[in-house]
Length: 109
Image (cartoon, rainbow, N blue to C red; front, side, top):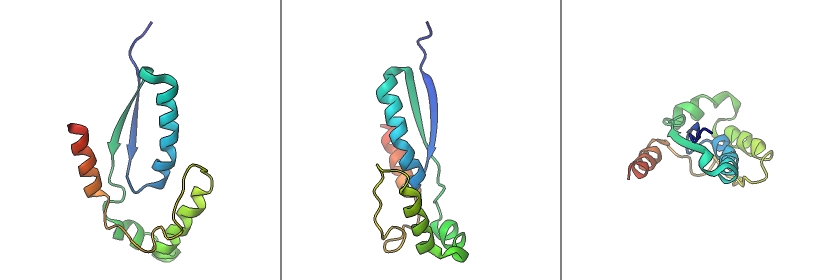
């Protein structure tokens, strides 16, 4: 019998709602299979420059408010995800990079 765990490399950005929605599946895998799976988290700065990614990328689709509406619509498919109706409207983050650096530092402890 092979005692090596199945390795899952999970790439995520803290501002990515899809990664957040998928986290429940990773938790289920870990709960169901315990030491048979090893999840390695990698933080990828998809939203490192929010102004470019959303501000420019969504300018013809409603800008930040349009992206926020899109996020809310997508999240309706995931009952475990609760999102404020004001997402991407009131307090728009500049970048996910600092949060990623913090999480990486915690990983290294």
